[in-house]
Image (cartoon, rainbow, N blue to C red; front, side, top):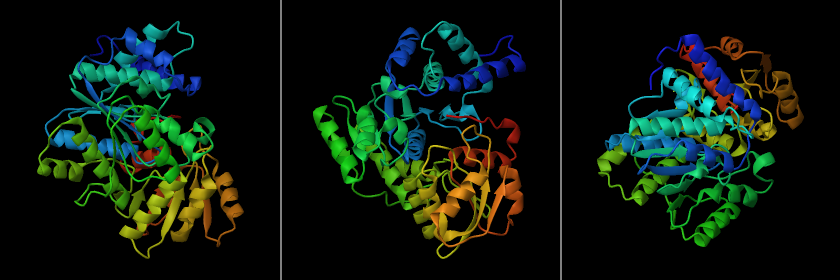
Length: 412
């Protein structure tokens, strides 16, 4: 899948074109993606999938599943979103990440295929097709798929998996998924297929009722994980032990059999950046909604009891930012509100206004137009938390890991 005759500039233009398709927005529905996969003869014959939806924890759960498969000697594909630093993170297997050359060559083929389509495929539909083509060429027998937005009308729902997983459901993307928990749960539970095993965990009662009803209607055997994983995991926090337990249950539901030592190694060796990730005295966490913030607070208290942090905070529009700030406030020694490289980023002045409107105890507040300025403003000896958005987390990691030249901003 090389780039014969394709220069770096040409390759970059192809990748830029893919990002440009984000302006088509998010279109929920399966007709376009089904047509695209049909014309490309995707997915590969015999390929098996594990499909994961939910509001929070779905990326971590995918990472746990993928890590166990790797520990068990299976080179599985992994499709997740969004990326933190660059697009290639979204498409990988146990051996490598899709390369820039492979991305560009794949986009060239897709671009020619859909040039006259109306409606035009969306960014996410094209990214999924690119991933499935790469997984086919890599010969991946198993693929772990994370939904993008929702589930029922998400592009990934064009695939019939061997097992489905539904992580905790909460209030997010209400403008597109519904304004009540049962409505949001109905969208997430839309990935449940006839006869395909479903794995979940204790949920809000309203959400669990929808999952149970949908599974029963579709004859899908339902397993509700009753306890968190008791062993060590490579990701911090009690919530990650629940994600680990769902990952183990999902693999058992596929019929794959792994030695307990293999499972333990996979859960211990997992890597999933931007989720309570420690870099010296800094913690980077992509918590961007109320439930994620609550989990972040719980993990913070487990790891750093009685400690406060200087919080570098940035958020995108369309979220309940006030609820997140209110949740983080008890351990905020100071706020550093910052802008970042996302077209949806809220101005730091707006974040100040939201914080002031909450009416909680005053904290020192500073605004910064860039994350780099915010990082320079904090003392490296202080405990620092970077939170509020995965896009913010990604840009911060690019700076902290000296990967700014590789950073690619994204709106999805």
